[in-house]
Amino acid sequence: MKAWILYENDAWLAPLTSALDAAGVPFELVFVDGGAIDLSVEPPEGVFINRMSPSSHTRGHQGGVQFMREYLTYLESWGRRVINGSKAFELEVSKVKQDIALRKHGLKTPRTIGVIGREHLIAKAKSMPAPFITKHNQGGKGLGIRLFKSHDGFEDYVNNELEDDPGGVFLLQEYIQPPEPFITRVEIVDGVFQYAIASNTEDGFQLCPAQVCQINDEFCPVGTNSKFRLRDEVTANDDVVKRLVALMKDFELDVAGIEFVEDADGNRFVYDINGTTNYNADVEAEHGHSGPGAIAALVKRELATYAAAAE
Image 1 (cartoon, one colour):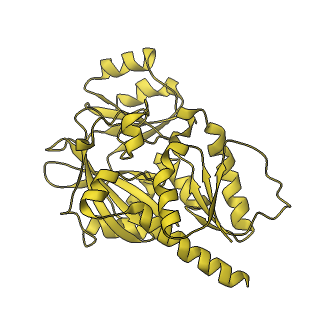
Image 2 (spheres, helix red, strand yellow):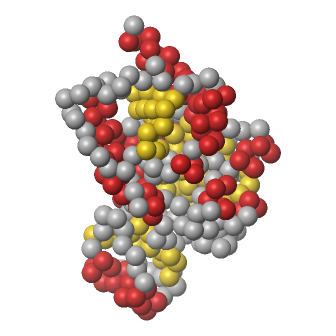
Image 3 (spheres, helix red, strand yellow):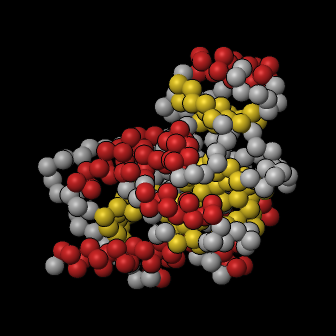
């Protein structure tokens, strides 16, 4: 009986696999980038961990996203426990669905227009006052996010530089101006608030807390570790955090880093849910937290529950 880690980016695995080793959890890595599913054949026993990122297409692995959408449903049909299963994954790969889910749970979100087909972008943007931002519906790490201060600048961008979202769905979104240049990311595992970090946005919006992104990933130019700091004034008792915990329960989302930005009046606008969350090792080491450790503890409990039910 073991855990199966379904992944497409091995650069993000070390913190999780180290935590699983420390917790004594047996596991096997399964690289996913397309393939075949024999629906009549029972999958292996154990607990599955979904580590498929919406940014997979930037590493040439969009086939993994499509495969995972079907594979997670297949696993669940055979009674397998999946950490961040099919319902959670559908939320993660669609920021349109995220906005709807956030508003359902009484959370403020920036005004957002979903646009299917790049040919509609320029016309639809005219209804969005400047400044505004664009982003990909299937994003991750801030992909496709650009801030525009004028509609003329946006039109030039669409005609000359725009990169397609994998599914052809783009977002036009109200820009929330923070009094200080940072956004906040709340980390939650198994319904328990872990901590919140502030991420500096002075150099742009492509923010990934993982150290490997800061060094090697050209799609995640986050610079130095000084971009991230613990925001200990955000606690489990905050109304936004409580609502996020309820949302995660509703959508069977076991693990997530969820981002919000505050305006000058202190209003918090939530805008991004990251199921394949990464953790900043320096921040965790400095303050004694361990997101990967919390995930490993969850997997260990679920494995024990699954093994007991199988006896």
